[in-house]
Amino acid sequence: LNEDLAEAIALAHDLGHAPFGHSGEEMLAECMRDHGGFHHNRQSLRVVELLETPYPNFPGLNLTFEVREGLRKHEPAFKTQDGETYHCTSLEAQVADLADEITYYSHDLDDAVDFEILSPAQLEENEVWRKSHRAVLARYGGGQDPELHKLIIRDIIDHEVHDLVTTSAKSIAEAGVQSADDVRRQPAPLIRYSDELTEVNRALRKFLYENVYYHPRVSKVNRRACEMLRRVFEAYLVDPERLGDGATRRIEKEGLHRTVCDYVAGMTDRYLMEEYERIAG
Picture 1 (cartoon, rainbow, N blue to C red):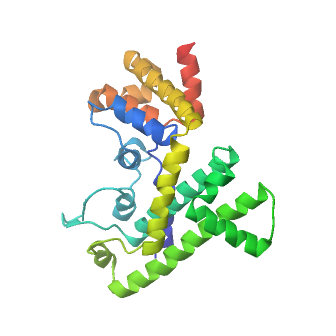
Picture 2 (cartoon, helix red, strand yellow):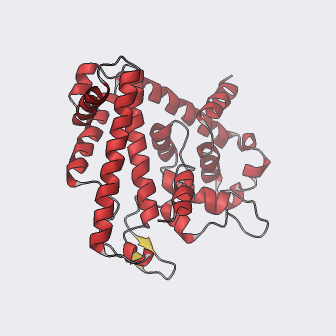
């Protein structure tokens, strides 16, 4: 694999994320419902192809086709530079995609333990946690939180990565691919988990949605964050001068809603909260 390509995709893939993660993305999508919508993957492409302008003669960062292709995850189909339709991105893009998934779910699990959203009894209901918990106890003996649960999270990540590398190496060898174009012609991604871990991870996602993402404490914080984002978005629509000269110059070409969306999507959580305080007084 081309490590530089994989790193570039991994570094750029979240550039389009809105403040407050997926809750913020859902609110931005709602604000843009009648104006072209919003999706963080497409926004990442807007950032690198249009919004960043370090060169005087053309917009964007002048990235290669392969990097930009890697930012188009979750698209149902892709097109080569010659217009040929295909369904699989490069191996490097596939690696970045699943590395993101492993990181996302393992750290959400970690945070849920840190903030006591999940109880020990709930954790033992999940196979991913239960298996790594037993492996850590067998390897290190008894331990106390927080050291123990950090070791469990580390073991979960290690197990996921080991399975992914082993399964992917086998699938690549069996497919006999010799080039990036061979990879793109495959009917399904070659970077993948084993069938067993795929099912286990599906259960983990279900577990997190049922016990973490819609937990009352999490939902309360998300509702507050979304309300702040909505108020800031609407304030910019009413008074676009708040956006500053650089953004307001783009309104005529991009439209007011898209310009505001680009501006808000580029904020950090902290900056949006500070802007909300300024607007709300």
